[in-house]
Length: 480
Image (cartoon, rainbow, N blue to C red; front, side, top):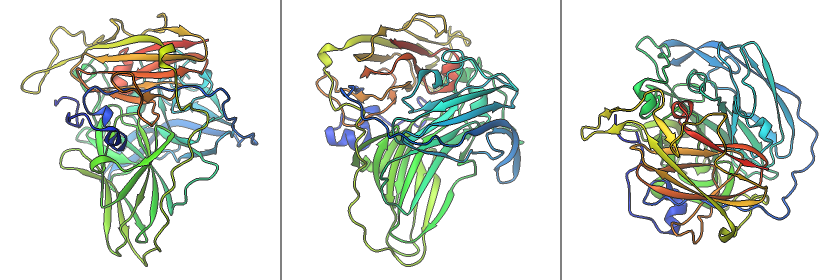
């Protein structure tokens, strides 16, 4: 196994523009993390009539993931990928999770800064939903953006996610950018045996102490890639990209496309073009990217996953009369509920030190050594447990700065629940101009994250590699 599969190589620290353009802070030297501050007066979401209640029925089904083989999977609607749920900002909805599988379930909403009781961490913020039972998620998204939902429960996330349970919640802006197609792109990988069946799950297997459950087959929106799209030359497409893989860290590349990132992890950002047309893409990560197709009839372009020699995820073919030249792309409006600055000198500070896991030998093989395969990871010397004391407990409105040190041989993506954050510069003298909620800490590196603890509740900071999460790679903080 290679170190940090498909993770980008290290590079000299970029300048500010390069850091913005490539989110290079997650791939280069000391990856800064971020700072968020609460505005004195949050912009209230507009009052809306509640949306009709909906059901998410998790149940076994059969689907052709590979064109020639049927696979027994778990789905929300009978298909390998649930249709995206769409709401408007401030619109309330009740989503009833009906569990018809054989395992307990709960659903976490990556990027939803909502009610802690609805965060969906089974065994922490709610009781797991037992087989045959139901739980109603009552959501009122305060922000627009692309939200990934997938199973998350203490000790039991890998299997339901690895069997296929994942989907997207799209919260639309008041005035969305004008595009010719708004296309959700849900990327999943599946560990299949030669007969097309999903391989057995074993959290204590070497994969649990290594890179996680890396699949042998990739799908886009539940089907074999590439997802084929035919549009007129010069069309604009909004890609809502979400990595719902259990563990696969990859990079994306835009071939033949002019790409503009307009949102990161659900939050609007200054529009930028990725450096070398590439973006890092860890589990739990989301991007909103507006791409412009070539202007020549018959031309083709692709969104690529840089796995092996490269795998096309979405392929565009230009057909018909070219569209007239468009006006310059306008950035999404900033989220008025997120602050532009924070007084770092007033921040409460804490350390997060990630240790354990297999070591990578000179021959790129896993060396488990004395690692306990059932308890291979630790944060601050402990394995996460529901009865533990919080990393820290603070009053609402407290600025936090967390120093995250990765002493393992693997890239470590961490997700901050219920909050959006910025990446700090190495000397805490500023932050990068975008928000995010999932950060990647390279092996052997240290970064800082900072934010205003403005959302009451018990919030996890958790690995987005689900096998590591199930084995206790998480901690939590409390906002009162």
